[in-house]
Amino acid sequence: MAIFLRDVEVSETLSMDQMIEKIESMQSYYGNGEASNLPRRKIISSGGMLAVMGGGLFYEGVLGVKTYTVVKGQYSFQVSLYDAETGKLLCYTQANRLGQLRTGATTAVAAKYLTHNPDVTVGIIGTGYQAATQLEAVSKVRNITNIKAFSRTESSRKLFAENMSDALQVPVTAGASAEETVRNSDIIICIAATMEPVINGEWLADGSTLIAAGPTTWRAKEVDSLTLTRSEKIVVDSIDQAPNESGDLSNAVDQG
Amino acid sequence: MAIFLRDVEVSETLSMDQMIEKIESMQSYYGNGEASNLPRRKIISSGGMLAVMGGGLFYEGVLGVKTYTVVKGQYSFQVSLYDAETGKLLCYTQANRLGQLRTGATTAVAAKYLTHNPDVTVGIIGTGYQAATQLEAVSKVRNITNIKAFSRTESSRKLFAENMSDALQVPVTAGASAEETVRNSDIIICIAATMEPVINGEWLADGSTLIAAGPTTWRAKEVDSLTLTRSEKIVVDSIDQAPNESGDLSNAVDQG
Image 1 (cartoon, rainbow over the protein chains, first blue to last red):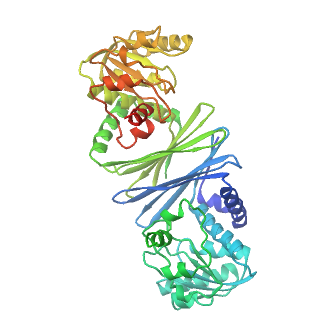
Image 2 (cartoon, rainbow over the protein chains, first blue to last red):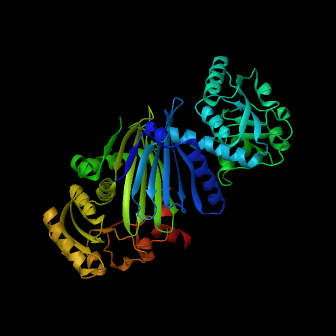
Image 3 (cartoon, rainbow over the protein chains, first blue to last red):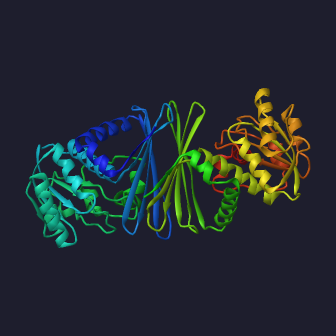
């Protein structure tokens, strides 16, 4: 008999630490060809869209499908998990919370392997649905000494800064601008999914690490081309999927 | 709140007549570009596979995803249905029964539009999981006067013939061979999903209609090349999907 879960039950049973451990091992197995990814596909309707993606963790004996709708900016995620050895449905779950944890954990794994110092300052661009779990996740792998947060609406970023100060027990302030937020940060998280770049490559300090986690479409751009040309290393979670889904990279590829 | 259904509830609430009506209208809208199809994709694991496909019926305001596993020849289907206007999950259902009804109904729509006589004789190759609903569906759109059924195992085809005689109140006999089953039938249904052809084009009577409903992979072959070259018309339900999923057609395309 399959288990059916709602977001509240996912929140109660799954911690960010557990998710980071799972994402870290998954990326390692995936890099070795022991996991499989079905890249996202979308059906666009007049009112919104439906997206479908899937994957297999052969080393854990599970296969899964994620579906979600986006209508008027509202997302609704579901995941079906199957036993690869029996074909049985193990679990069907709301996956809004799961997606927040997963996206955050992916950023944490990036921070863990792409930065060196144990103590870091963090700048985050975007204070929406995915932002809090980004910071929570990084706080699990690095000692964050200070956070600046920026988004277009002043009241939003101020509220976010207050809430995150309380939640993480770290000084979080609302940045006056994207530039001020980016300059002097060791780790910059971009979770804005904007169509126009919000990061100017000139702002980045030497040795800083930019984690662009937002876009899922080639039309999006979070960072400008200078950001990419200034980068010593560009690391993606999926070589197959990045050129299609990371607008920052697909635009760069188009421009040669 | 979404509805969760099991196969038994689908069986109790959805009739073959209703499904034929839905498939008929869907094919019409799909032909006019008012429905969308995400072709099947598969993740192959050591023990089996997971398949995912999706679709949108824009004229009904719904979007859906179908997932299924195949392990050791056992299928397990699920469907998620969403409201395209709100993005809300409407229904998550076991879809084994739904798939039988849908595949049968598609054959019925083919029989309705591709054959002319009200009274028909039917030959069916394959007496497995999808066979009974194929005959039930055709019986809804044509007056079947006689049925011959063939499959590799004599006891299977005899049992199938007995059961279907009772169910449809039509004379159903087990054919002695594929050839005998095909010759003199007005409608031939192939639901065997074999890797080697079971239909020889020489056997087909002039004016007969062959409905090949089995394969979902380019590796499969149900009919030989003579069957295709003898055909006056070849009709498919999806121009996009047929060349990849109907092994009969993809092999023919490869051979020019």
